[in-house]
Image 1 (spheres, one colour):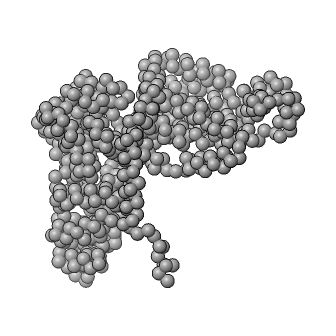
Image 2 (cartoon, rainbow over the protein chains, first blue to last red):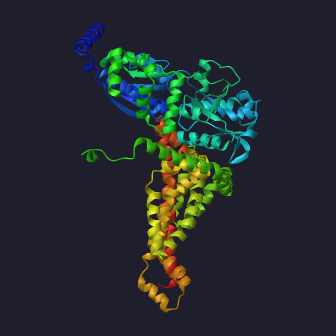
Image 3 (cartoon, rainbow over the protein chains, first blue to last red):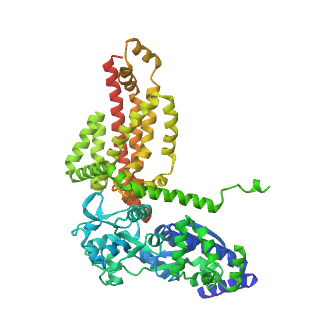
Length: 334
Length: 296
């Protein structure tokens, strides 16, 4: 019975498709997350889906956990272009198992990840610092302004998925006993500001950050090797990411999983070609890095950056869409 | 016709150039003077660190006793004292003691700083219409500009932590005390002043023995509003690395932890109500006492 209904629905969609691909796409809501690369991707998706596939796209502002919760419970927005899935691992698995959400694209951005960073001049001035294990022996290089006898490690803003991980790694590497303070920067603005302020003055800085970001490129930050192996996904999920982790073990950061997530209604009700585009788009690290620095240097928003990208990186995005859609998009840019 | 359809704006390129120019100028400024400005605020920062540590390290029964005594000295009302004790016991019971002490520390310092700067500024404004005309728009800006806008330069200059947080709080909390001090002094009856003059009061005597005492209800309303606004900024200050009740609120907001957000939010409210009642009662009492003293 169920299969029959699904079959009929599919036939209906196919029929609608044949009547005119452009009209069939329908309304799509895309999460425009509150950081540059996601904002940029959401705007590229909007232009490509609107101009290339005739969808009506609305961007919905969001953050990882709020957007995911809304997608999971309300089915809105339809697409989260850049979701760092580890922070919502358990509920996401449940939602995928129940069929309400779909993983679309395991590598929307190539070469992305999280970790602990220092400015590159810190490594040049202190060549003996090769990994996190070396850096945590030298709190004296990174004095904490409220207590200069201690070293400051700037962690993750309160409420971010990575905050718990940093807390646990701070314990695991026994950093408190080594003379470190875990500083909570409070917000993305606080984290960026702390890093920008330190690097602009040429001070040494040690903290959490992630790539690809304009901040990493602009301030020439280096992600450190942790110097210990990754303890495995089971330990990571069961302990390192959990507040209740009693005895966290030193481990390197897990390789970040970034995915484009879409709701079931997007898969069912919208043009399958649009879904195929979402599944196929992969931003090379160089192109993404260039766009992020462009956004930062020109204080450009996601929309400006998306137009800049579509105009100047045709070789990248034309591979993601069909010839017909590519021509429509190019026409709209002129 | 085109002129009417499209606003003659500056042009994207020039606009970006202008914005970049301002940013680079500020960056150079912060590179050159940042350390000196930070050094200027260092004593204040060490005081705040010391004060916060003191409040956190003190045994809780002693702290509650101190709060109760302060509430009694301020309000002379057994109801308010009991309310204070119960609130702090509840805060401690629900595991928010340390965050609350951090918040009390920064709010107290912010309030004293604002009063110390605000009352003299308000008196100055009340003395001269020209100063009033100059300061009022600045106060308008301080109260309405979105706090994130001034957080950017403050963080670029001073980094994250207590001092930038304190500055952010004071920018928002300073205006009411200035405005109400000014207003209070200006509202003092002309006839009373004439009487004071007739008795041969000089300028100082008129100001300190007549105008300020008569303006006290307004000044205390200002102190009260300053405390309330400082408490309202607790969450914003936490966004630039100030410890306290704002941090769990931020955590709750981004994770939909309803109970965590509500408990810490209510702890802020409890602090606000205590500070409000005590300062209001104190203001009222001060006024009665002065009236009695002058035999009015």
